[in-house]
Image (tube, rainbow, N blue to C red; front, side, top):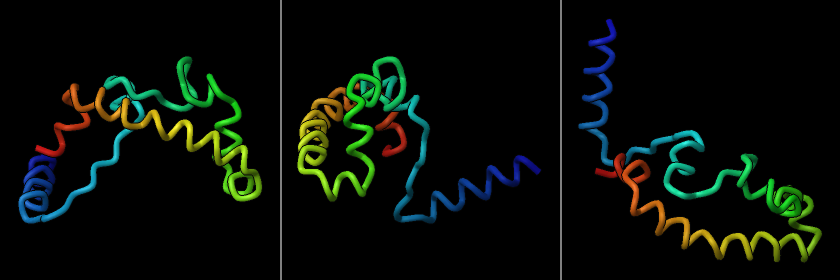
Length: 93
């Protein structure tokens, strides 16, 4: 049974032109991209960022938008760090 499921999964992957892989935060943190709630997490270090992530706060508060824009500037650095690691890129191969 498990072997049949694996073969079916392989067939679906082979026949697909696009695939989305959903993972947990562990894949990102292993690559140097911080999570949200961990000891070094974005929201742990900057509680205002968690509040700014609420859509009603984001829409109504210019300061909240600035917090998220500032945090977004760091995404490039994190993506470069991730590119040097295998996990986020392995699924793309």
